[in-house]
Length: 119
Image (cartoon, rainbow, N blue to C red; front, top):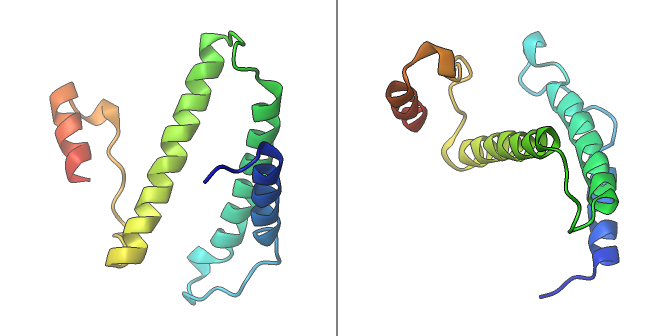
């Protein structure tokens, strides 16, 4: 199924507007988690808006500086990590909130790769 570029923009805009509602109650009853979902949705709205604008600004044959390409690649990786963690959480139950993501500085290259696979 092909979707026209303008229709795709409309769909994304509609989805973004759905997530810009007022904050909901803290369902966990824990002050540590107050309105984190609302704040995250607000940030995602901004990310989506900027992504659409950047998409329109960049042409297929543009030669962007390496630092720009790197930042966009990192953002894509990081947002994908969050998406997949939440998908896992929804399918298999809540993930361990206390578990910290390993950092590269804590391990050698081989140890880091192994730890990330376990994480």
